[in-house]
Image 1 (cartoon, rainbow over the protein chains, first blue to last red):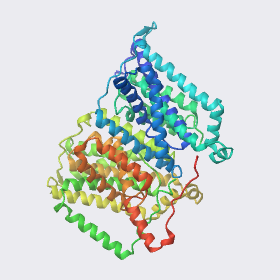
Image 2 (cartoon, rainbow over the protein chains, first blue to last red; image 1 turned 120 degrees about the vertical axis):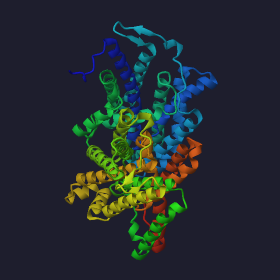
Image 3 (cartoon, chains in turn red, yellow; image 1 turned 180 degrees about the horizontal axis):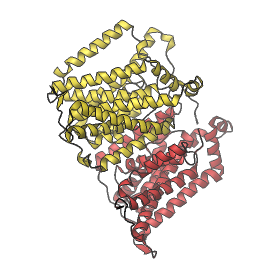
Length: 297
Length: 337
């Protein structure tokens, strides 16, 4: 009787899964944040976001393989390189389609993602390249109820800081105020003498940099593989639908929360862990179609 | 959305007589084609053409971009393969079962997805279809990474042996024509007119008294069902149902076919499906370069070729007829320009 009920796992296993959930959540949060920032300014859903995340991880790997640059310099270099790449993409391609329907932005960035991932898969196959944890962060500490690997603790803290920093930049600084104003009414902001096209370009670069940063941080945890971006991007889309793209904080909170939900599901019903976020999305659509933090359209 | 995506009225271009001639020529070509081309290639292209036509019904005539149509095609192909192989159903019932499941799935997905519009709609359908992918990956009956192999084609209605390539080809052609006819009738019915009204201006359609959600849902279900029909047929053609058919790459591929051929044109998706399928045929040995080339085509189509092959032809014909009345693509105000 009740054999369908899963056994309650021992506490360390529970916390271990929650930790993994929190780590995944950190990446969901950083990626959905980037998507929300780009969407706010460009009105484009950046399908290439996953590819840019993958590029970040590969930049770190290239830097180590060919330049001997370790993890810490990569944390700075990779986002800059990918941001430059993103800016080039925006100038070359995206700026031509702002006048068109939003869906063309989705299709264009989807095409770009296919190109980038196809090239990397052609070169490196589908298998992953290992990237080791920086020596400063190897090992784990005993918290009494579980072992916490140092690197994972770092990822959670760092991504929370990055998320908070982005929120602060957009919601609490003058630059962020320009940005939000330009989201509301670009023509008016431009009339005040602010270079809106340049802001759009830089915003896209910033979003790409966020994705790349997440990619570098993910490199030691997951392997560096051409498919890592496309695996995560669909989940991040679901996160964005759940959170609603209207708010920066909403993207952050729903990212972390859904990571935790996924971790919990892994404990109690492992088979459902890959689909639980999509189920949550369906429920949210039924209850609050605009998303948990979204404004009704 | 998407007034810019569709500015084509295919039937307005040719006079009725020439329209009939064109259709007759195409039909004749389809009938003699297997004597000149490899039948499996033609069958594959026809299945994808039906898939793309079903997809185009949504994007081209309702203005909804579904990025999850692989879920319908893939699940129908799994169901057909399973019922035919394991339950021993005859092919026609297997196809019916697969199509019915796709219709059911389309009802649920459509019911959820039409709550949002535009890119949200695209993201929701993508996420829901990814759920089907994971289910197909984990469920027992789908065979995981192996898929369901060696599906028997069986005897249609107990008499016609489908294992012969030519017989199978004509069966696939008939299936395609039925699906195509359903779509054609839908587009040109009063129902189709309402769909186009929703595409052009949904608030206005609502204010005219139409319950647009019902129309959108019905169109979604119809599109999912026909995508399922394509998937079911495809699983019998290749005697295989595999994970490939439920991946989001497959959903992207159908978008590509329709985009190349011409969004919102009657024949566009068919042309696009043949172009894409032949391209993949020739490029098969180059591995991931296929993906790269698909990406390049996406970018080129979006930037410079938004009408697609058929759309451009129609536009050209219209310009020859009335040079001054060339349609201007609709635009919307933008940030930063």
